[in-house]
Image 1 (cartoon, rainbow, N blue to C red):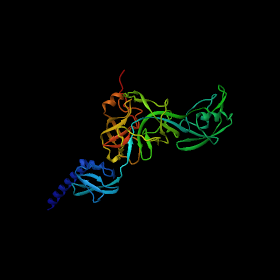
Image 2: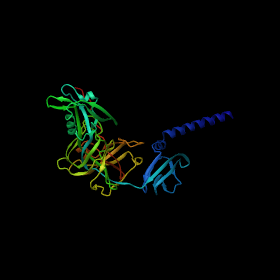
Image 3: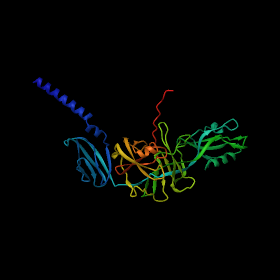
Image 4: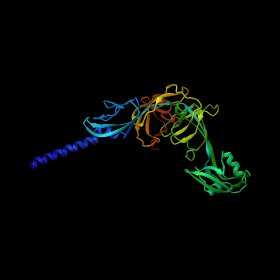
Length: 396
């Protein structure tokens, strides 16, 4: 009797070990680990969930489930049970269904002209052997906003305020890393020019080329670039006082090479055609309002927004303008897709597979930032950064 009990225990232990190993290593277990706690989709859209040997079920009449393909009949939140072999409950997932929201995909080349709120310090310099700015504690990246309580409108305005001081100490208010500070600065007479100066290099504007990501026909707003406009010298995100989104023409393409990013070169300042305003400069791109409705010639009816839960590794496309042919669609492959708890950059990694784009640009190049990413008829994101492949070292 004891031998039989011992044998049964051994068999049970082996079976339990095999079951545990199967649960850890099986495709079903791997598929379940990638499922989010909450799955979002548009009402009326069908989506097949990969759950391996498991079977999905739900008693909620707002959902339709057939062969693990989920369709939401109406808005709301429902619960779906995950059952191993259709028999043993092993998990649950919440489903949130919302009415479809459509946007007009971008892809057009745009010029960006931005004036900063205040002036940005990009470096300090000597005036007659010393730097008043450095002595007052100013450094690169500070944004000067007030002089003696008066708002600073531009670099030239700052020059005039400092020169008019005649050497009397000035009260400067500036922003550093989100915090306001006020210091006393005493301008120094520049013997060469006869003007009082503060000993700092400053900047009040910037301009460049990027790509429109989307236009929202419901409220006339847009998003572009997919990343912030940062100062080239300090890396600081530039605060917006005012700015314009302009129609751009791509006049030259610098092809990317290993170790060197390529670049789209555009023209937009000579014959300015203003498309809209720039109201926000954020880590996720620039945003504002269009002066007139925008229509993408490839998708004149727009496309629905896709949710991150439905993004898969595999084929996708991007829309971009790299020459005189206007907006073109190019094939890419999503090689990695991350699940994010909050909006942030670099949620996926793309590999260009389109021979036309590889021949012309070598891949993603500067100026293509903001190009919308499409998959399965949905807008799922925008290109944000160029990944530079380093050169391999060689012996000499």
